[in-house]
Image (cartoon, rainbow, N blue to C red; front, side, top):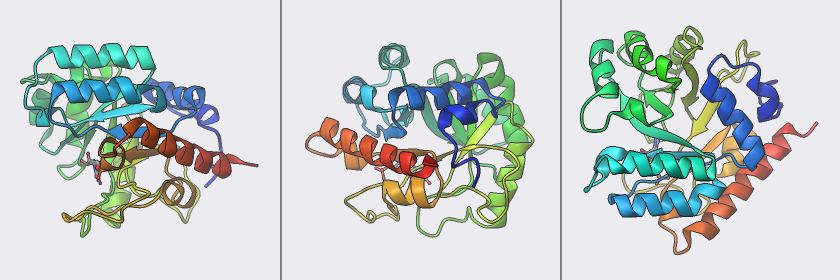
Length: 264
Ligand code: BMP
């Protein structure tokens, strides 16, 4: 597609959401399209990963509710590390309720996600009210939202018309929604009217899946063949004996695929 062949920086002008512009520029500046899925259960491990891997990533993805020892010092420390290493924080919350409920879940409760997460995401299943509810909280804070258009897991129901309707929902909310969690740029068969960012989990160079339905593809398949923009890598990096060495490998693989894709 025409957008996928352009550099991240060149594409920044086509986005209405400030955070998307920030992310696109930071990727070229740091030469990384790698996001780490930091699915660890202690705050010490989480912050250690953010500090160790920070130099190699554009986005630090959290599941804040899996921490056994969460307290409000965690987002504070994460925010400081995001500034130190120049990355964005993405809380992978996968909101999935009516607008009024997700608004409260985003703003309040133990985690107060909107107060620290630059990016969060939502399932489009409830209908567009979910976007409007999250937007009321997130837009004044200059946050950005991703919609789950597809999933990496075996048997996912998010496919076909559901994915295309997700794209349409995003297109009506470009001030807040700047992209997708997905497995490929949509649509692949007709010219895209508007640009979106695609962040893609289910990436490993060593495994083809896990025992619970996860399915993996390589950075080349994701970035080069499927036209996605950010590779999200979890266990393949933080589960390795040397996570820093592994992060460097994935950064290089993702970046080389991007360079190949944008070569004129
Ligand atoms: P791993 O690379 O260890 O399989 O982790 C993948 C991460 O991406 C997990 O945090 C998971 O919640 C997330 N994820 C996914 O695997 N597939 C999707 O379709 C959407 C996700 O957010």
